[in-house]
Image (cartoon, rainbow, N blue to C red; front, top):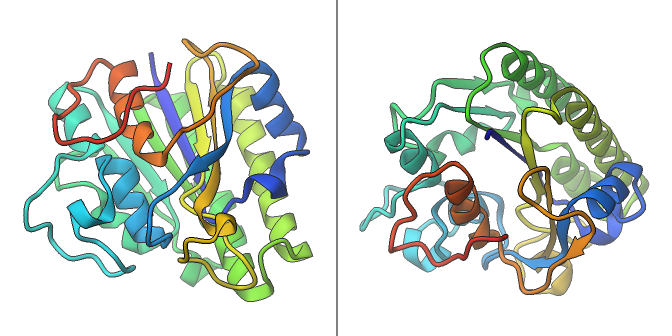
Length: 254
């Protein structure tokens, strides 16, 4: 089994619920449209929680500036590496480089949204992901799409520009499913939502995210409740036969 985790930064469930790719996820996979992120609902703390399955109070990252953990919690990349699984990361926001420790990745591709613009960076990242996964096929890959968050900050969440960015990202995900669906199980989610032109609060608009699971072993058309982004790391670890650390707080989604 191989797993591709895709994250659209700032994706609100009510902004994508009618997109054809999302309808495909809901009809053919297991999903939760009201999953919870963590506080503060800010990009780097949320990603650290997603990959380390603990709240920000445990990993210590509460802003978009990384600081070393005082009491390190094992991360998903490290657990997979220990299980001899190959891992890759494709991303367009440089601050995510600290999600894993040196030596945990077989491939790391940064296409900076600040340099190339987030629309171009997301499209290039998707192209690089498809090329790599069809060529050497790592056991686990993470693809980060930052365009929706950038559009939300520039134009407002639920604005036309934000919806356009999300629709385009969903289209890219649909292309990956068509090309890789026979070889990868897909997880598609967000780090946080947003409101007005901000996020980071405990408002439902900021704290509610969708999570979709498509492929083996997930049942088609199965709706879940009470899911958290903390559940993603243990679920991936279980799918790929890696050890789940006692420190992790999430549960395995089945």
